[in-house]
Every structure is written in structure tokens, then in C-alpha cells.
Image (tube, rainbow over all chains, first blue to last red):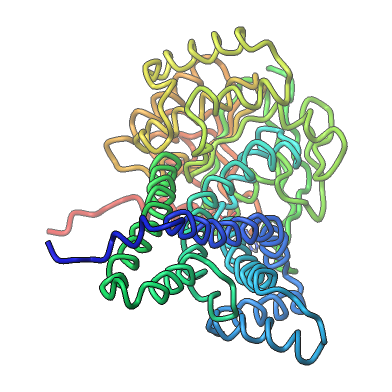
Length: 224
Length: 249
Ligand SMILES: Nc1ncnc2c1ncn2[C@@H]1O[C@H](COP(=O)(O)OP(=O)(O)O)[C@@H](O)[C@H]1O
Ligand SMILES: [Mg+2]
């Protein structure tokens, strides 16, 4: 078997450090998703309004966030806020801001889609059965919307976790950055470590994202 | 003759200024089965939707058992409980199984006793041949089965009037019969119904009276034999001709 430099992994606290880095990435994603869900629901509801002003504003926001590469957004928030506004925000906070802005846009679009995809007949059948508007929302509309949303928002979580690999560019020490540090430190003693360590990082991303994807797929099937 | 149950008077319905129903008046007596026919887009669905106030109306009135049915009014929920409606498109709630679909309104709107309603629902499901489908979800049912469930769901509210809007129009031909049979059974029980349908033989068999709507008005209001054999108006003759085929050779 070729030497992958895996021994480096078991040197000192390297494995723990990698897991710590992974936790940073997961934590940023989870905080961002936790913020994105309520904000996205609000945005999604606003997006269904017929008002031309809210329509245009939300549309521009959504398009802007989608068109900009996440890395550019990270740079804008991290560097421009320090330079131009004089705020000294941490890389982690900048990441949460960017990921929340992104997650809110994506979530908002999902909520909008879920809301408008409930056929008019669902509201009417409920009315014809004498359900009040609030009963209609509570028993008919919200359960159907949530069922459509949950699998989609779980996929958003995995996309976020994967995208956290960019935040090392603004100095956040997450799993990929830790991996680089370990490889650097062992360049002499274990020149092959790069391959082994990155392989482990890959497996870590997989171990986190795969179960989440499976859960999403399961829920999607169950609630189709 | 039985007493008048539903009284529709000078009903006017407009959409964005264009008049769809232009002074519709008719009475329905308890136990009567009314079939409403007319060409596509003449306002049949709109008429049914005005009767249970799914649509606001621009003139006239609808009264059920002497009480007005008014869009947005306080007693509307109470009035709607007395009017069962089944639509053309399958309108079961897809996230609930059959029995929950049926129980929802009796439990949440009428606050009735669960075991009682459940027993009644099972009885009704049996009557339409679906007692083994209580736990199924709508997506597991055929179109004809869904419509039968929708009928049971309406019946479970104990309505005094039933509205059917082309309930077989979206069904494959082999499923039409099973749904029409349920409606014939209801007619046999003496239920009061207003039925919109394009199934002319069925209309003739089930109707006590046929209303023919054209240009926003009731052009014929007569018994089915007269309507199908000797319609007075040219428009009704033209309309009925659509359903007749001459031999082509
Ligand atoms: N919500 C609506 N907004 C505007 N026009 C409508 C609406 N609903 C129905 N109409 C119009 O009213 C007319 C009657 O429609 P409908 O009652 O569905 O006819 P039918 O059921 O006899 O085929 C049609 O011309 C239709 O385009
Ligand atoms: Mg119609």
C-alpha cells in the first residue's frame, strides 16, 4: 500500500484539530440555517404579495445574491466592513452574515414556490367545508407547505456546509484550513501527508452531508 | 309539494365588469334533484360557487331555509355546513389519509364526537364501496375513488343541500359509472341536489328538473323529458345537437 502519510493524523492532537475545524464549518452552517429559516419564511411570504415594489425589491435581492459568487460576498462583507465602515468583525461573523443572506434568499424562493404551488382548490375545498381561514392555514396550507419545504431546506444545509470550504479565504480556521496547517507542519517528515489528510477531510464532509441528504430524500419520499 | 329549501333570486355575478350571471332566479324544493346544463363557460360553476358564497355576488340573493347566504358574513360558516360541495378536480387534502380527510370538518368545525363521526364515516365509506380504503392516502386512490371519498366527506357534514360541479368530467370513462351510481343512490335517498354535468343520459335519469343556462340567464327550466325531447329555445336545441350523431354513411 502506498504511503498516504496517514500516520500524521494520529500525531499529537491532529485528529481532534480536524474535527474541531469541521465543527466550526458545521456550526456556521447551522447558525446560518437557523437564521435563514425564519427570515426566509418572511421573505417568501412577502414575495407572494402582488405589490410591484415588494416584488421588484425582493427579486433584485434574490438575483443579486444568486449571481454573486459566495467568495465575492465574503470578501465584500469581511474586508469592506473593516476598511470602509471601520467595524472589526470576525471572519466567523462575516461568514454567518453572508451565509444567512444567501440562505434567506434561497429559503425565501423555496417558501414562495411552496406557497404558490398549493392549488387554489385546496383553499376552496376547505372553505366549502366551512373551515375558517385560520383553520384552513393551520390544518391544510401550513402542513403542506412545511412538507414541501423541509426536504428542500435540508439540502440547503448540505450546500452550506460544502460552501464553508471558502471561508478559510477570510481567515476562518475551519476543517480545510486545519488540514492545510497540518500538512504544512509535516512537510518534511511526511511529504505524502497532503493526500491522506485531504482524503480524510473528504470523508468527513461525506460523513456529515450524506446522512443529511439521505434524511432529505427519505422525507421527500414519505411526504411526496 | 315539499317546502322551498333554496331560493336564488335575481342573482347577478360579474367578473371585472363582464357579466357572467345576469339575473338568475329559481327555487329548489326539499328532495328535488336539479341538473344544470349549458355550454362550456356559460357560468354553471360560477352559479354553484355563488350558492355557497365562494364568490361574492353583485346583485340578488341566495337563501337557504329562509336564511341568507352572504359572502363574508358572520353566519356563513353555519350556512356552509349545510351545503356540501364536490368539485371537478380532486380536492382531497393530499397530506391526510381518507378518514382524516372526512373527519376534519366534522371534528374541527362542528366539534362533534370523534368516535361517533368515525362510525358514521365508516358506514358511508362502506356504502360507496371504500370501507377498506380508510387509511389510504389520496395519491393511492384512482380518480373515481377520490371523488367517492369527496362525496362522503361532504355527506359527513350532514348537509341539507349538495352541489356537484362536473364531478366526473376529469375521470377516465370506466370510472365515471361508479361515481354516477353513488349520486343515483343519493337521489334515491331523497337528498336535495344541484348537479352540473355533461353526462346527458345520467342527467335525464336523475333530474327532477333541468335548468339550461345561456348568456347568463336561465333559458329553460323544465322537466327532463320536455327538455330533452321538446326544448322550447333554439339555443337548447343547438346545445342538445352537440350530443347527437348522425350516421355518416
Ligand atoms: N375567477 C374568475 N375571474 C374572471 N373570470 C372568471 C372567473 N371564474 C370564471 N370566470 C369566467 O366566467 C365565465 C363562466 O365560467 P364558469 O362558471 O367556470 O363556466 P362553466 O362552469 O359553465 O363552464 C367564463 O367566461 C369564465 O372565463
Ligand atoms: Mg365549470
